[in-house]
Length: 505
Image 1 (cartoon, rainbow, N blue to C red):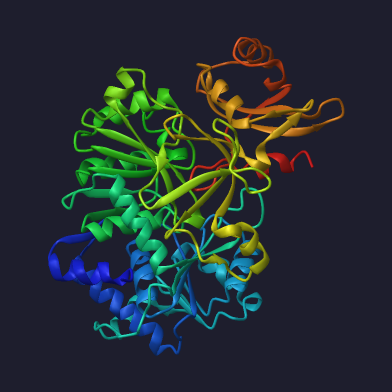
Image 2: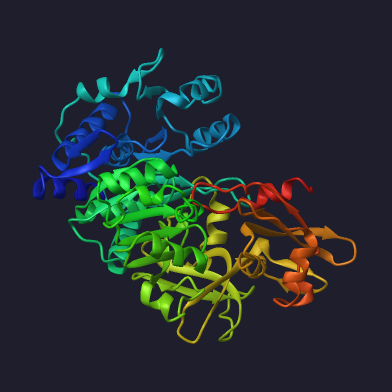
């Protein structure tokens, strides 16, 4: 089986059902299948061959799913590009992947134009809007046949090179096969009660690995709504399309309960929320159940690009909230994945101990593109080494303690930045927080907090220190701090601690 089978099956089973919605655009499953075929045939007509890489740069749009499926149907490899990068980073990604064609949205045409001399492998430039020097996307696919090109594809063939977010280092190209993406979809559907009649809304950036979960909706035959995240727009979409299932980054989710005009919108259709990027604080969960009266379950996840991406999932219900049983864990392994905790010698840590989280399953990547040494290091012994530190409880629920690189060694003691952050999040004046380790002559490293206050709230360093005295051991308390208006986050909601540390280097 390959990912294109989902498109073919939906076109046969539900030809007239609306499959994709983006603003005023609506495509039936049959239309999606035909447009995917046209794109595949167009790329082949340009002279591209099986295995060639094709990049895509734009915000969420209907063409994004056509890109994923159409490139794969031609036997080629999709390279989704983060639309929040700068020129230097695009140059690196396009050259590293060796992309031979790039499909570009209107807002990013000037960016790519400025790079043309620096990206020699790119021979074909296709734009979603008319632009000099570009072939127009709609013209290209309209001129191509709506029939399956018949390219032989195996489940071991590459489908996507998805680049890591680079929160601690330069992005790495994660090679995902058809088998990896299908395994993730099956794991996803085994854990979440997604119904064929559900309308799924994803204000999750489609260049991100979360989009591979979006493909699971397609395998179920659900209607999918795509758009960018913006509070007013999100509530309008929830109301207009009667959305049942919302997949949203943690960094965006936290803003929904505080939206002042939320009561102006109908909110009774939503029954499931899926989020990821960071754990959802309990006060936010409580507020979400208040905002959405029919919400049944919120699912928190532990996910990685290298795992296509789902690893662990945990459901959080209204009753669990009432019974004060909301766990701080990331749950248990999703169906089809297996997690262990290793020490520095790749041996299992004792029960209750903290170790590096390692993962195995059909969803785990083939390796890193053009990085053999890094691939061997990460996949050594048949286990993907995540770089995250965790522990299991007696029920085998996984708790992510911290990134290996985010552990702070202060006065000879290990401090998990996540633990300190969790305490600070309970302060009624704090809206967002990140904790990092900074060089310190006395302690080796000191705990440093970067704090965002809630609107209309005031707090100073003394207030934070007093609050922490009764909450945590002295060596874990922030010894320095700063107050900012916002934290740098990537599209999946992860705080970019690399950026926070950079100002002190």
